[in-house]
Length: 118
Image 1 (cartoon, rainbow, N blue to C red):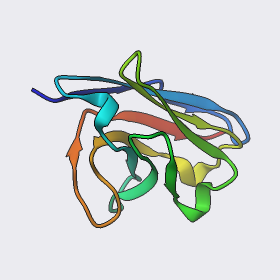
Image 2: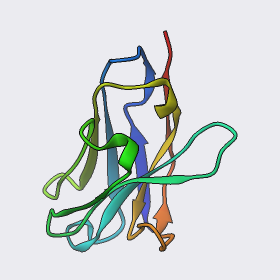
Image 3: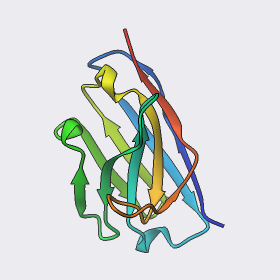
Image 4: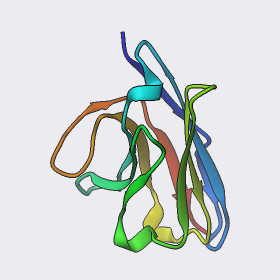
């Protein structure tokens, strides 16, 4: 059974940083494309970033370019999202997704809430 557990969310001040992690199990993580999806309160979901199985980053949402960095540790079956220079509009539930990207749904795990507020 595919399991994806995101963690690391919380309250951050504007300009601050958070690092999200996603522990994956139940599938071959090393051979899977992985991504982060977020859903702001009252809005639809939006893809944040995608990293291919070979470690190539293939997508960043325009509004997070230069601030967020996606990475993976295949030895630990873990996906990361380093978020710097946070803005209130980054407030959302963040989900990690197996084999998902813009135009393809993939398998979503449990999310972690990020709140950016002073």
